[in-house]
Length: 417
Image (cartoon, rainbow, N blue to C red):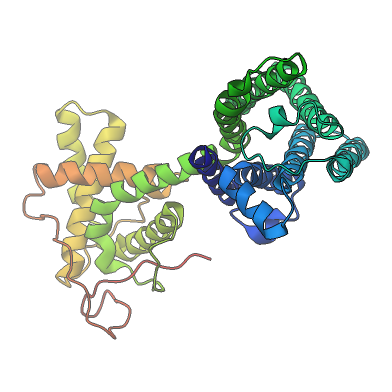
């Protein structure tokens, strides 16, 4: 059983670390702080409840069953933290939220104190690591302590069920999904953990032995319920960020053909990067580098190449937008070739803005990169004499920023504050 609860504790601990991504700002955000505290306390409950931990605590303190009030106190603190988290998550008038939080902390603080006092008054000299609830179900003071921690936990879980049911009817999307996960985890806790504990204890009161419910069924159900509850708390907060990072990684890869073509024209320096940098940060650097290179290549744009490529694309049945992208890709490839060969810029008949520079976000650059790949595979008629230039080899150490008038060296992507 120790392995089951330790695995649950590790999963909960990882969830808490993921939520607390920015330690300096987490303490100033009541929602983030209460989320981390609730998940961390859930992890501590499972660590304390493991038979191996109980044996170690009892041996260190020299008090048989000292791990029992420690575990029950942690469980009561987790129940309180879960209620506080829901109150902060739901929000409302600041004074109301503050009053509800203080009442919850006061009530469960008294509960923890009562558990400690009852254990001190009880006669529990026989160490029980897995079946303490049923073994001492008829022992004075221990009986009251066991019943008190179960009632306190049940009250918190039932209130959470009611709040999740009511709130889930008012919201949509990820928040509703998270509330449903919390509701499912809470129901598993109520039915799989609490009901089995109550049944086993009441059976002992009536002279029956259903200890297997308390020792074999309750722990894994409690572990699963806690993991589901934590997933419900974490999912609405982490999934949008994770999806954004995934999209950033995909866009960063999609821009690779465009970056390979124009990187020799970029003059913006880039500081050393680390492997742990997030995809969105890398994408931002690449976007700025590409825009810098496009600006440097603008004098080399040959509008005759663009017009021929556009006419060919329209004749091939492409849409006006697709024809424009194909024409701009051909013109950009020709400009990169001219710049790499240090040719004189063609006579310009006015400034021209690429579609990628007219739209916000990364979509325009991604479309240009995809069009460039198609141009490389089959250059439009009229541009065969202007093939795309292959990627420039890296510059030697110590080389300065690239200039259009000097030798072309591979630049680095810029740092964006």
